[in-house]
Length: 269
Ligand SMILES: [Zn+2]
Image: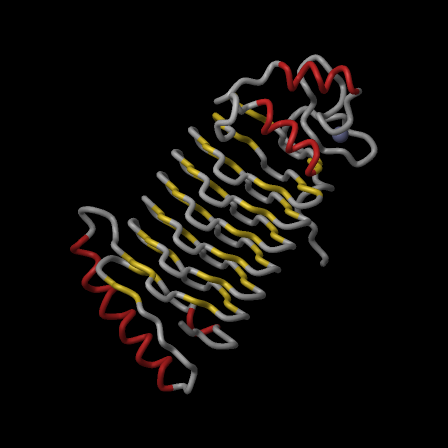
């Protein structure tokens, strides 16, 4: 508790600088999108179009505000579409839903805090995505989501259940030093780049049934070495008496490292 990254630090972006608000100023206004007057907020939302870039760094975003925002980047009944999204250190208050959202550029949710549940079901991320050091206090679901670029979840904290079922990682996926307090499901997840799971901590059930580790194209040389090491690691774990019935197809590099060693509960199908 000693170090509280986030709200108290002076942000790198122009902010109001008082009342503890770190939200980036809305262009032409003194306050952030959460704290500007209704007129300025309407003006901001009216300026958005599908595929728009959105910079909300440090802002406290309620579920209602997010809904308005996503409605503004949606044309008729199509899913919301966003360009570059900068949500570094954004605090999402309430349950947020990004289902089927299309993110066409790089996305930054570094150190974002989700106080309620977060849903990104069947979302599509074309660019690289960072949820590094993000904190998920409620459940998070990314079921059936597609990541085209790198997906970084390093040091992220998942306090509620986390589901990555059916997720397709097109490039590298990193969960280095991520911490899962409750169930973590990677059922049927496809890792098509390198999967960095080293030093991740699974304190609840970790499910990797039918997950596929396919590796990045052209990394075959490296994969054979890592593969044998990881198979060794899995064998060793099985001997400790943990229930380990992981059905994984290991055809690429998987850096499990110490991940499974810190499974305190059990890994099951
Ligand atoms: Zn503010």
